[in-house]
Each structure stands twice: as structure tokens, then as C-alpha cells.
View 1: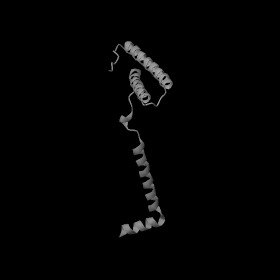
View 2: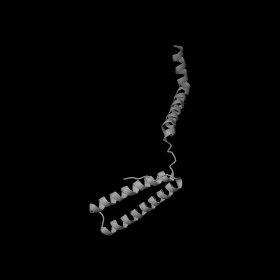
View 3: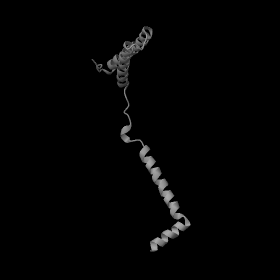
View 4: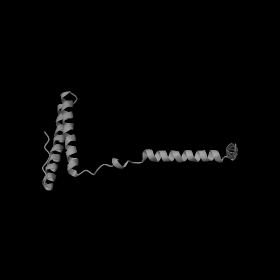
Length: 114
């Protein structure tokens, strides 16, 4: 009975609703911090230049395969196909040359992909 009277007197002066709003705001802030803080394991490891070049090589070869597919499907003209293919092949050659150069400097053998 005494607790009920204390609650009624707290509600009468507004401290109960103020406390409720404060606790709700605090819980909301804590929830946002929990949701949006970065996880410890999500940080990507630094890539070496060689690893980056291998990924870039694979992407370039995949782009060349896609280009050939689109040409055979009739989506590209002969002139467009030739110019884009030449630039992609030049890019692939540059990447392969840099991979070989870095592999020789590091003393490792370049990766061979069939």
C-alpha cells in the first residue's frame, strides 16, 4: 500500500515519467552503439601488392571471357570488340609482367593457373 502511494506521489510531480524517458533514451543509445560498432574480426588484413595483382589478374581474365561472350552473342561490333580486347590484353600483360617482376624480387615462384 505504501509503495502504491509513493508511485502515485512520484507520478504527480512528474519524476516517474522523466525517469521512464531517461531510461528509454539510455537503452536506445546503448542499442545503437551495440548495433553499429565495428566487430573486431571484420578488419581486413593488409594485402600485399602481389596478392592484389593476382586478384586483378583473375578479374581481368574474367572480363576478357565476358567480352568474348558478349561479342559472340552479337552485342558488340567488330571494331568495339577489337579495341576493348586489345586494351584488356595490354592490361593483362602489364599485370603479368609486374607479377613476374615482384616474384623474382621476392625469390618466390609465380603462381601458375591453368
